[in-house]
Length: 233
Image 1 (cartoon, rainbow, N blue to C red):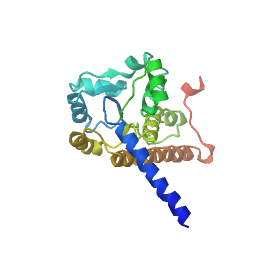
Image 2 (cartoon, rainbow, N blue to C red):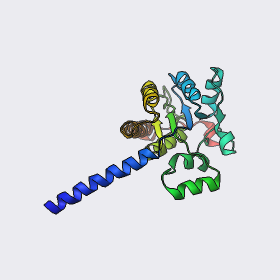
Image 3 (cartoon, helix red, strand yellow):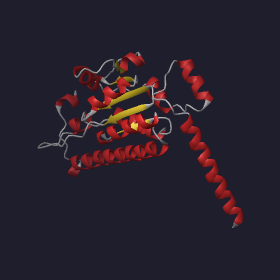
Image 4 (cartoon, helix red, strand yellow):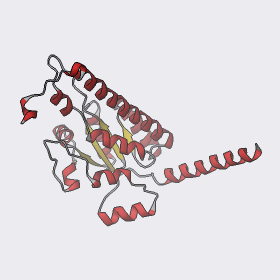
């Protein structure tokens, strides 16, 4: 029993050392990626990021909204990836320059070297909430249901939440003020806050995937689908 207790204590000590190492290597906030459907509070939040000289990258709709409301400078995702949005906007952020910047372990020398070799800059903050799945009234329309499924946004959220020790992820606009206050006070975001935000992010992905499941289940009841002629072409 004592031997097991020693292993447990050593494990806790090692965990604290790892956490401290990550925190010491996340004391900068230089780049933010914003892609939001719910734009509540995003203008004031983006203004504060600009005031702190944090570079903002945004997807098309978010970028237009930010610029329309006087937020400058803002980079389009395509300006960063050097690759256009394609397939009617189905592919926007699914690019190694974006996902690599989010998933890189900044305290790992090999990752830092690889980023530099490939010309990829780390992304320190991801602000994203997915496009909601529209409720369908009347006819069962599988094509419309599928088109309303957000892929890129959920990928960004999962990637940032997985790497929460290096990347702050925000899916809830109600958290903007809290994050700004903590950043103002500490100059960084604590491990505890990052962890809570990551939990909330994964909870959002679970909720969203369950909504997709329930919608498609409803559309498939009795195998009664309505598929528009556009899909049949």
